[in-house]
Image 1 (cartoon, rainbow, N blue to C red):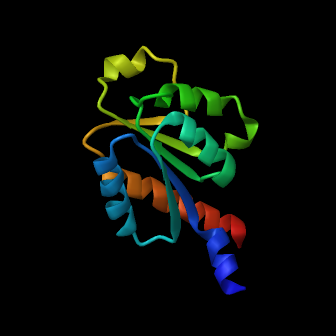
Image 2: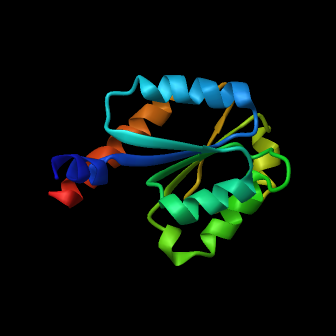
Length: 137
């Protein structure tokens, strides 16, 4: 019973990244964080959309440049779904600020340029985890 309760309080994180080495890096770095979380991964925007539908993550961390369906298309598709409005979306990209500014990303999306800012991602995750815990209690 307690395991189910703590599982419900665990922060749900989805990382969408097409580079297998970066996915391994994400798993290793996120695994060291001191918050209760469940981390899923996807390798392109289409798989990311499917996993969002299944998992309903609290935090979505995504690359913007990916094959098949890129992060821009995925984020803009998610913006059309009311159920996804509470999800925090963070984009981590190798694109320049000018390239990102010319795209129509929703204003709620936080954008960071690579290298991956793990300290800032951890701060976002900790804030979301404490908010989730407060709501559950």
